[in-house]
View 1 (spheres, rainbow, N blue to C red):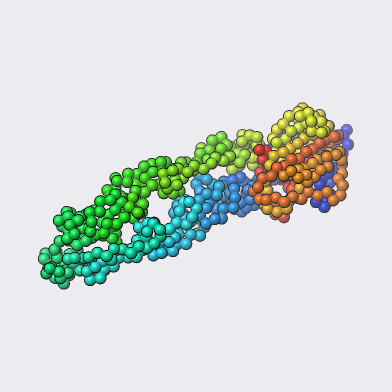
View 2: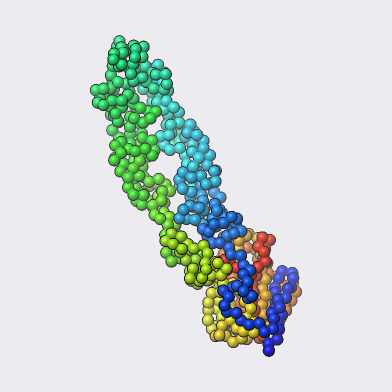
Length: 488
């Protein structure tokens, strides 16, 4: 019968024995990384794009806009919740205001309009927005002022009401009921509701109807106003040839024929500066795709006929759940992208090389282990190894949820060595049943930043076990979970 052996727990200042019972046996039925007694002591930390309530829910250490995010996404017009790009900090869609950080400076300023522009900045009022209403005094109308492309409120033109006077509002009269409503020029009189030929801004059918001699867009106009995105019928500027406000149809409507959004070409509207408009910055031009374990976020237009397609990213150890998104959890290894495995509903783990000797030579086999949490007792990890005189090297990436000092604990029977980011934290690669006092393993981790990890272990004789744990100010002491490990 094999003798009982006291295992070794390496801590910052305290030695805690792990007692392995005589006659314990190997249990190969529990998932890789599960507690040897069949329990589940790990808290699964969710991957990028999964729903979250707080930063501590996420493997990356960042929870923004209700989703686990790759980075801190607190900028004014950026979001981690953009459809098709959940989990990645992207410019917020045009017209949104995810954190209410874009102020509305009112149309009078021609400044910010309270929404995002689709490129990561606050949006200004569109070109052609009325920034000061029209007004009319006696027989002269001052048309509405409008926002220019450079954000200036440009005063409206002044035009004559001849042969009419102003009405009680901001426009010229277009009909009369008495001579007092006609401008007293050339003896104009009100005859059958008219002071003579129609004034600028008045409805017309032909040029001969108008005192100006021009009838454009069915309005008496100061010019012939023949441009595609110019009109004499723009509200507030009737009678003056004015650029059609941004987002309004062209004249005629078919002049700016819309193309499919995937082309990022014309969207069928005017740009506010007198020409046809392309699909707006941030318009979706390509759907997000997910193939095998590779995610490509939705493409968006740059406002200049080009579809900007994000770089492809992996699903972080998971496989695709659908044609447009990654899985957030796993139930079997098939839900994970090789070489990751499933442990405690998370994909990850470390590459493990198992050797037939105690000095990490003569490799018998390799696999991915979900965590370093094994109690083989008097048995071995695999029939390819004897019960004594074998060794294991686990290696991959380690990611913490918090930026703070972590303490690492190694409880093994027999020897172990822990190396993180090239720094040897624990070096006790000798056969032992107890550890010297004052062995410590602190290491400063940065939230969401993966570091290299290597853990070497050997079994010389008797019972065999290997457990690697950690703790920090906000991370309760536990076996390092699958969600914090990656074999890539």
